[in-house]
Length: 329
Image (cartoon, rainbow, N blue to C red; front, side):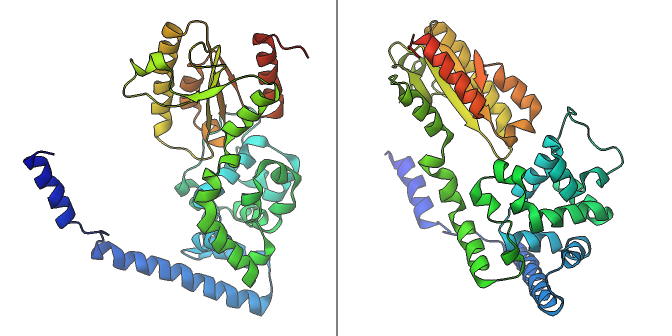
């Protein structure tokens, strides 16, 4: 480290603020948090006085300034997760779910199966809650009865489904502790290896007794300095790959999805150039991709074939492996 670099290094060490904060922001935000707490205390007293009734929660999210935020805090459901639930309802057009959510009364020109679904913004959802009683009732119905609905049992991870609990709406102590724990462990849950879709791929390959590895492909490392990264599955080895697999399972959306699609296209070009005998396969799944159709279209263009993690698609991937490696059934 030269003297100039050392001076800059020492400046950061000596003048570090540790935790930056803006008092002009902190005050109003504390007021916002206090209003949510007050809303929850009033809600708790109302339920103790009148009992657990859906009308109380419809009034909460329609007429209280922080009503929806309070309901989400009580149950541990994030704003993003609520948006995904609403999008799921609009996409799958399930009879039972439609009935529970009053979906056909959300607006006059209801979406039809096959329509191009774009995810609603926070503003759109909040406006519908305020202006459409049926939409508000449908949202409350999900919180009350969603956990028992077969389609949600099938579609939602148990970690998320458990948040739809009547005990939470009743402010029961054990349920509130559950909310706290799930808030705390959300990041760990998402990052745990057994919960990683790549593990599903690895198990599928191992079951067929095919060799594979992961990591950087040697020839690509020389040409993709900025985009150099780990490939999820390289089958059977890095020296002579026949199948190269990348996976992307997204439950949320981000502006980075467009950049990811561009990156995959660039990588695909280099794979074709330096590993002409290899197939570049993409496992692309999750509602985060479903609602970003333009990014999805660019993403799938990078691959020789694409799969999801649906059981039918896993079987199709097995068939591909069996064919490429001439495995006897």
